Image 1: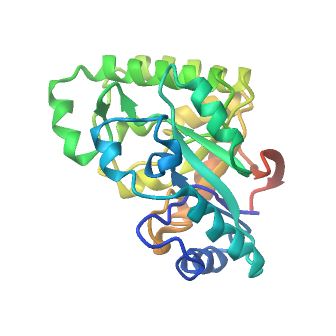
Image 2: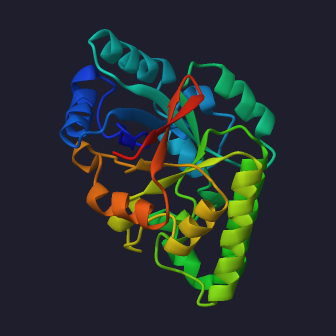
Length: 270
């Protein structure tokens, strides 16, 4: 059993014809559990969840059309899960809970992309890293990620160390190891699932999410995983799974988590 639940069809129309290109690539990669998980900030129905000039400019879509695409694909006989990727912002828990209950999602991805008004993984904001203390920025990120997990609103954590996306990483290994262990304990305490994501291999950092020591800490704490690509185009569905599968197994994992209507099951890694 292989999974790829973290994919985005946003570069094309919300049609079955476009989605089929993603599904075909999943089939070629023997991915039995495929799901689409658009960024919520794109939808007018999620306007209150994350509102800033950057998201406001990109809030152009209707979530009903997205949902209808998935329903049409299912009626056509395709096996596709309906997900959403939500940006966690401290203090937004009530609004997030209401939004989550408004559609029959199979799973909710919780991610942190913003530290206040700093979209740390956006190319147009990359220059701000030059004026930031890297350790303090990492601590801020992991502190917010902790709050996200403690909210219990999400089914799995997206790219748990995406903060490293542009290659700005602390040189203090003890600092990172401490955070990895603390986060792994938090994931375990709140029964969280994390993704092993190949997306970082296609980013400037050129590394898997999460880092090897981070993933090993999660395995030691018995935190479940699934495999995802974070594909934004059909050709990236299941990308680099030839690296991801042995990477997960090397950390001690032999099972993946799958979701249906927010209920989870476990299967051996394919």
